[in-house]
Amino acid sequence: MVAERPRIALALQGGGAHGAYGWGALERLLEADLDIVAVSGASAGALNGAALVAGFATDGREGAKAGLERLWNSVAHYSPMRVLDSRWLPSVFLDPWINSSLQLAKLFGPYFLPLVPGVRGMDALRRIAGETIDLDALRLPNAIPLHISATRVADGTPRLFDNNEIDIDALMASACLPELFSAVNIDGEDHWDGGYSANPALDPLLRADGTTDLLILQITPFAVEDVSHSLPAMIGRISDIGFNACLLRDLKTLTEMQAALQEAPRVTGPLSVLREINLHLMQAAPELASRNLASKSDTRASKLQELRGIGYNTMDAWLAEHRDELGRRSTLTRPEPELA
Image (cartoon, rainbow, N blue to C red; front, top):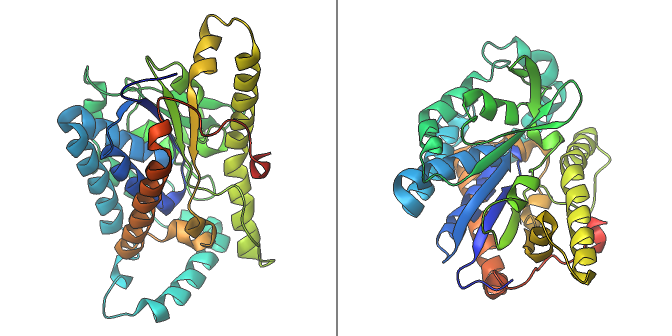
């Protein structure tokens, strides 16, 4: 499919504090000469998507960039680790202690964090989303279509919320890690993090009007060089595998179906869209694979800004390599060996 100006549908993966990497990647993408025609997100990707779409609806690209910055500045402002983010405390000495503390919190947090007032109800994240994302803007006539996913606790299937359905509860459901938070009840059904079932949902993006390209922004790497046999490292890797399982499945299905359709002599109806759409995956930067379990919980401003920079530079490099292919051809034509 050839288009003068590519029309991009964005799929945004979740990943806790690593969502700040997505913030930087989206900032760079917003500077490119592209049209964003639909967004799908899970967990931190849902928050990034909502901030982008709400900001874009009110003030275009600059509004989208401002919305993302407002969201992550608020995450840093309300971080319980804010007091530890100081130029008077060198990170070379502080970071190892913080990493160890966060790893212990990950291991034992499910036992004691629910006893801390406000944790189970996601009070801090509710405040952050409520103060920084204009949910009414999602329903403006010019708003980019947005879809966020949550997982039904009862049967493990994804539930998708669109612009008209997204409220604070839907955003919380999409980011609800059950080891920390109580399930979010919506319409009589309990929901957990969308990453368990659709991280992110790709199907609604294939139906977006006039889409030329589907671009997936990955935050959790498929493969890592080495996995320590320590308990925190194994728990972290198990989490990564679980949150990537549905994306791996969807990518394998999409690429295999598209390859088969392109061999078919004639395709009509909805399948013709799948045949023609260009598929792209901006894989997670190697720097994310080298970070430990604790990194996804480290919400210090300095660490979020570091991730933002990595995301910006990774997207910049991806665009330098693939910008001319957008609107013209897929850069993800079949599952690579590490995706199989």
